[in-house]
Image 1 (cartoon, each protein chain N blue to C red):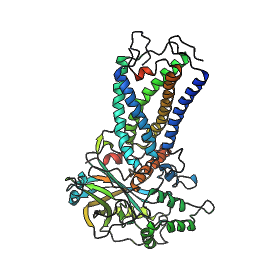
Image 2: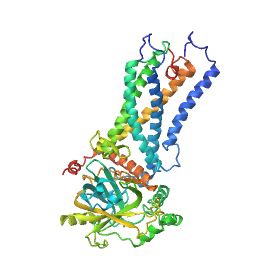
Image 3: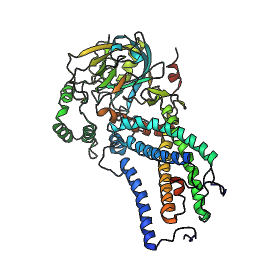
Image 4: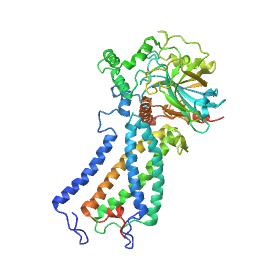
Length: 367
Length: 184
């Protein structure tokens, strides 16, 4: 195979050659195996972004092109009017007095089914992307509940598995859900809330919560743990949905309300006291904590999501402007990673579909 | 690009070429592992690996530009004359591929983040301009390209590693030495 050459060291014996080829093979295989382990393929027990994303494809079925979670929703556009009061908390340009920041948002239902009846869950969600003049963005994805059921990605994964439809009945197995809650006492606050929660007849009358804690840094470099929520302004609470409501009353209600004028929410930042847990979304902070009203979210228009400007936005809550950062809440990196997996899947599935009108994206920056 | 057979050439790669080779070897291997690790991870590793991945990718893009200039100006030592023809072809083709991917990977990554509409941040809130339109279809194609070309790059790196060891341990023809030490 290799001809001998006079200028080279004397040839190797067959045994030496075999050992050296083995060394080469081991080096290549070792590096390849390390790569496979790091990527999770050779570590089937490890929780990965894809494994969590798969739980939103029950029975291995997905709705191509749709979000893996919060699949049913509607796009909204508007702006944020800063009060200037939150400037003491964060140096972000958003909070300068009189700042007016364009936003694209999305109101949605949790769950992977884009055709779910609006009363199928008592929770609604509100995601927002604020685009600052210098190109910085703040993205947030909030839910209409004051606490999250679980504190860690692992528990979230177990909850997803426990509430997955039973292949036999096509419905979740109540016994498995019960067993999950029994073995996860941290869900108590959420269960207390969910007992009284009723599906509301309107997106517009709900308050939405960041759930996770974040870190705000002001111009003096003072860092503080915060959470935020948006609270409806000037809209009396809507009735609970009734059996007379059809499957898709939320969008109709929103369009109807917007035809009468903009909808407003107050953006309220809650500042933690020292010792308040920032790494546990199941533990709400006491109501007595300092509240700062950062400004008003004004929603002017809505668009169907299949061509609306929110369709292709990844509302990754770790996309933050200067003056804001993620806390040590373990759910935040998991959300970022799983959302990315979801975007990867749905944009690829969506390649066969027409793109949303980009005019909405460009008009966002027009003055 | 091609291995010159000019007899007057140095028998080793130039010092800048050797420094850049080993610096980038470490950087590229790190990038491949960081990339595959961060997209799988759901722990806090996801965020800090991402925070390393982007500036390191930018640094490697700058380094490969310098490296190509060094390669074109300083040349490369000739391959041993007694190497089988097919091995010379594989050597040439795999080096072309390595250079192509060293340029393509950071550029596709940069364009991919641009197309996603996320500000392209390198360090902290320091952003660089977008180089692709905000478009989900463009993103989908670039995202897939970034993944599969990363696998191709890793496979090519493994082949390169095996070939280097083959030269050093089996053929013992000075090819590995030419990237390790300085011999006139």
